[in-house]
Image 1 (spheres, rainbow, N blue to C red):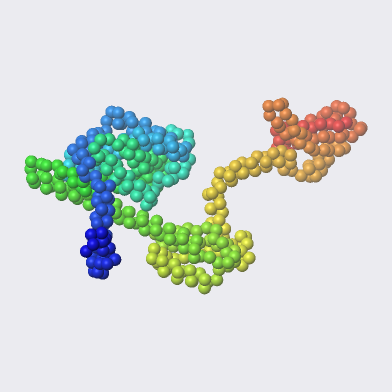
Image 2 (image 1 turned 90 degrees about the vertical axis):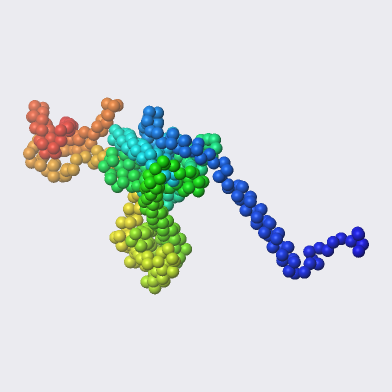
Length: 480
């Protein structure tokens, strides 16, 4: 063979050898990707287990400076919730020491450390009690007790709260296990998990006597705390933290059993709640999508809708052309075809008149619309009511007292034969500090009356008017 001849390319190889070559290349690429991912996500080699355990135990302690920091941070958070300021609430969470005992619970269960577990629970109870008491005192003495969006948002957990607690807890414990300190990450997690606002809301609910708010906020805090501890437990187990060793092997086994029991007790209700909230969120999402994409009819518009996952019902309020029952039946069948909305009842409210005029809608629909409008525009309505009341008050000044001038003039003619003519008006006066409206009567007397007679009848007429009209202030003027 000529030495200058090039070797044969892959094109000249048999088909089975080509396949083996491609398979080898693909396998090499896959191994490279796995090695890259492993190197990117591996954290075991950079984990300082002994220092992490010591740091967690140190953060559990709750006395002296930590107690005062907690009190001040609760006050700051309460102010932020009271004025609905997200920035102030975040600032309060930056300085809160609440995370320590919760992480301590998760880690102590994972490593079978009963003493640390007991200390974590005691300190967590003290922190929660002091936080609620501080918030309760603040809202009790605060002159502003209106419900704000920041407070309402912390009265019941949602799937987002659970997800934030899970990933926030994971980020926190991973940051703590790294060699060195990552303060910025830990503080960021403290913001994300939002443990303080629910406790402040518990104090708010107790201060105003709303047990529903207090219970819902405490429920939200408990969920956040449970999932942060659960995340700590999982990461600690995955990273292979060593178990606490006891001289007495029976005590170790008993301790392990207690820790495992606690872990199961915590995990089962939490997982059940997570699944329930996930299903509820999926139900509402699919219901909104169904109403937006499926429930369409020419000349008809959806003005309001509500969803009830527990009752498995979707209520829709329509205005415009009346939707036939056959179309509604078709919608119900399409609803049953969606897995997340199976066995859900579709309730349609619409007007009885095809013209779709709002005055012809059923009472239930109208009340629903008005309620929705009131909730959205409550402040605007209150301002308008104040303006209307002010205007009515001003108009009443010009209208005068509620009496019939015709009847009054006839009575005056019978009782006072010296009156020749009678007039009435409202006189507006001011001393430049306040303005007042005074009912004023003008009387024309007969020419044959003497001045003394006019004066006497004028005084009697004025006294009679005050009794007759039940007025403390009025004026009688003679035009003669």
